[in-house]
Length: 358
Image 1 (cartoon, helix red, strand yellow):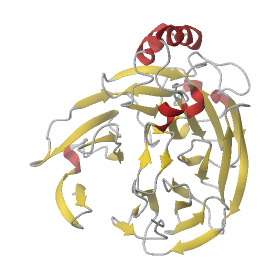
Image 2: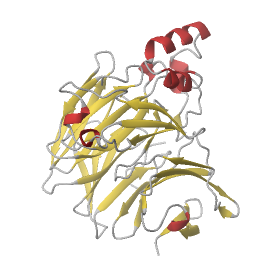
Image 3: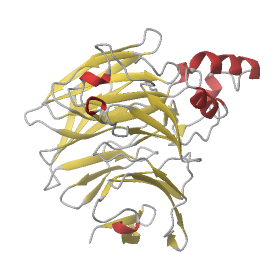
């Protein structure tokens, strides 16, 4: 029976496990599990193929059997949710400064200015109210999801939705109305990958990078939910993973094709351009991750391999051949000391690679 297992990194041992069916229906399975410092150290979020996203709490007695919060999204797909990545600066003490975006803005702006921005930014009044009260809250707790299936076949799975993890309410839909122009997601297939982020240049408003079935990526800013900031097509097959770096000024994408793309984001011009394109002998990248210090990037491949790159230069550093099945995910610890990988072979690997210099 599939299980959710909790590993204590301080003791390097399993500290508990529960049947996966406790989280979501066993018949549907789990799409993704993730945590965030904005939730606290003892909470995490799970997404099931049963159309729900749930927040759970881990206590001394183990996992609570009843979720703290349940979001009924009515979305049934394979696109993993994304939590907010805030602009951060990694310190030598081994952690990212999560309120760096706040200090760069000079603190909380005047209330009247905030109200003016709110009125200008949103065409949907309910979205404006939901975000306006919390946009400068350090505890931003939102998730981005591939949208609910529309009654119109052409719009199925096309919209991106942002949900509030405190109220279980949908606060933004992108695009906000049914688009008709050539750059609209109607022509791009299903949404396959998401990166929700909060750049310092956005004045506290959330942005989303969405990867689509035709290989395109759309950059959304909730201040203008009707039209994307820009649309690019770096891949020839469905985009399967998008990950921004800590500065939120660039990132890495993987797809079902034979390339990895490192891109840069220019917030002043609203452009997304290729910084480095890496060709692969074997196609298929399911997961991507960038170490919090912005020095190392990793990918998880269909060929059972993990690839490690110098993120700043784009050159390959290592190919790891530990897993015996498709590698589905890879991620780094907040102190940059550990990398974790997951595979269809039912194993999770913990790696100490190129440790940061203290």
